[in-house]
Image (cartoon, rainbow, N blue to C red):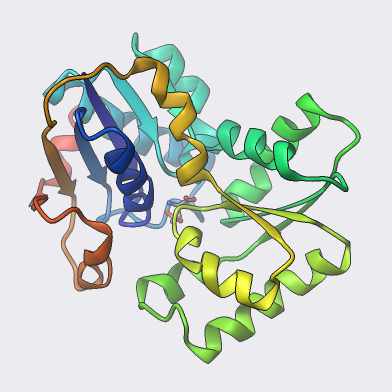
Length: 259
Ligand code: DGL
């Protein structure tokens, strides 16, 4: 049993880590397209093309059984295309995040934060309203959270200021639940919670686990391989997300662009 996970960069390692801990027996291949990050400010066409290239690489090289689209931006724009293109289960992060939020929200006022592309796609809003049209959805792009996380400024005063700057408006609308609709944001969960302790925070990297369970069988300990299309200093900041026995491998972008 093998799972391929891709993201635009390092943020999806939050998803890799969650899946890895819960399913130690599964072979997991992670691809971070760090040479072309961010996806969050690209056009729909480009996001779909990059997503197809990442997924094809994992599918053709490792014959993966399940594809996990860890990137919220890619899940928002490319999920249907990927589902039609590949003959294996394709799981994105939007649906599990929405289901988890609807389970915990009591006042039916839900906030969603993500990249510009994810928020503009309205993917979270439409998945929520498909399930419950009585929910009020308040969305907000939080683009500066990504570089703050990549700089390792998780507990920096600037990050606390940005949390208030971005989220106060949603809190003033009365949301009781906040969906972290971007791979990087789970690393800010504690920071957000310390500013807004009453907010129920939904982390899609955890919510996705239930979607993967049906495909996992019990086997011996699985392989872990992590690939990036570019290696930069931000990796140091993400080391704590990696399993001790995982090593990072570099692949050339040209290998991805063959399809
Ligand atoms: N991985 C992206 C997401 O979850 C965030 C970084 C980017 O813009 O590529 O939306």
